[in-house]
Image 1 (cartoon, rainbow, N blue to C red):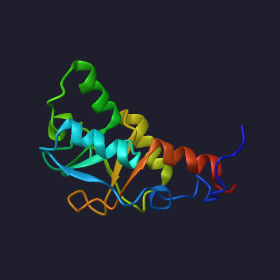
Image 2 (tube, rainbow, N blue to C red):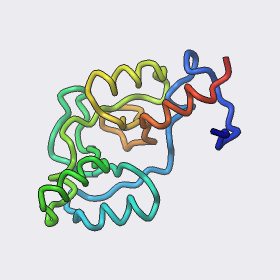
Image 3 (cartoon, rainbow, N blue to C red):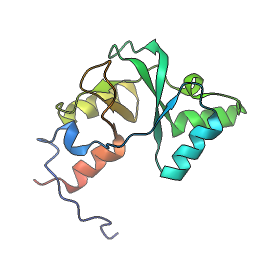
Image 4 (cartoon, helix red, strand yellow):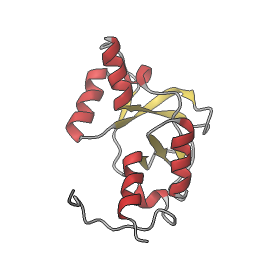
Amino acid sequence: MPRTTSLIGPSFRHATVAEAMRTGILTCPADTSLRAVAEMMASYRIHAVIVEGAESESAVSGARGWEIVSDVELTRAAARGDLQAIAGELAGANAIMITPADELKHAAELMSEHGVSHLIVSTTPTARPVGIISTLDLAGALAWGRG
């Protein structure tokens, strides 16, 4: 299969989250409808939206006020027929925060350990997110990193 990108980045072993993460995140309030979240994902061709104002606190990171609705939660709600769900109900209570300075290996460990495909990138657990990193971002670093 031919290569679909010519991106070359740092090697996975030496890369930081900042070098692989996506900036320009999309957020929505906790009361956003399932349909509106689905429209955001489909329109921007993304797999996750960060939910602002979530009431829970992550047991893993201590993050308060930020959660993630991924395409997986959206699909689960649709399969249950729960089409009236809102983002705050769909968001997993297991949002995990990571800093831009953390190593990619640490991001991979957190994703694997907690069974998640996205991490919120923030300078502190309560600060506004600066990005998001996904398993696909890690795959890109593994595929196209130097050395």
